[in-house]
Structures are given as structure tokens and as C-alpha cells.
Length: 145
Image 1 (cartoon, rainbow, N blue to C red):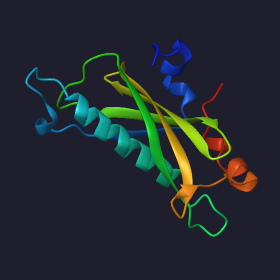
Image 2 (image 1 turned 90 degrees about the vertical axis):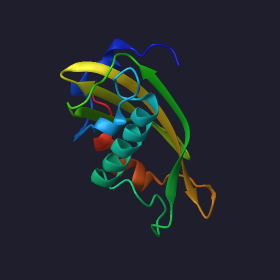
Image 3 (image 1 turned 135 degrees about the vertical axis):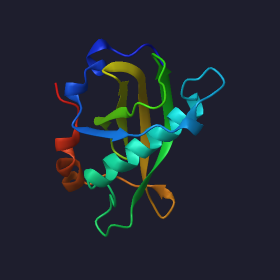
């Protein structure tokens, strides 16, 4: 992934924010948060975003779900224990069966990570179209201009 556009590094554009505490055990031998841990914390932020935005069940009967098919992470700075990470998430794109989330991670007001996750909506194990109703319902969670 190319270096993110500067506009994507502005936390004011993101409709969702949560804070996640760091743990001593998240450190690596260089005494910063391990990159694998960061990937796990990005997952936690996506789950919290989905729960807050009621992004579950994309099909009319609620049987749908979504799965990550691509995750690109740009490490733009170091993050450390014990300060929490401020995680920002917003809907960057919505397609027929997939959508993309932009994620920004900051610590002490400094950008440390930018990530993009592409998720495919599924039903009974196969890609499933996102309904117009669902598409309209999630517009409030898109990145702000």
C-alpha cells in the first residue's frame, strides 16, 4: 500500500473512536508494541466499530456476516506501553458485496498506524449483495469530507 493521503491521517474525518489500553506483554524486544499485536488491536477496533454502527447482519433476515479478505497496515511511528491507543474507524467505500474500512491509530496525539481493511459480506458462506436499505443505514459511518 502506498503512503496514505494526508487527509486520511486527520482523526476528525472518522465517525468512530475508541481507546484501547496497551499491556506490558504487548512489547517486543525493542520495547515498542509488537506489529502483530497492532494487527490484533486493529481487529478489536473493527469489532467495536461494527458493534457501535450495528454493522452486523447484512441480509434482510440478519443471517449475513462479513469477513476480512484484505488488510494493509502502514506503520508510521512507534507505539509504547503504557499509554492507550486511540483507534479511529470509518467506512471508506461500499461496493456491491464488499466494503472498505479506513483505520487510524494515534498515541499521545501522534499518528502511529494507518490501515485499510476490505470485508466481503457473506451469507451461507458465499458473497452476498448489500441491500439498498443497509447501504443507506451505514452512510452515517462514512469518512467525513
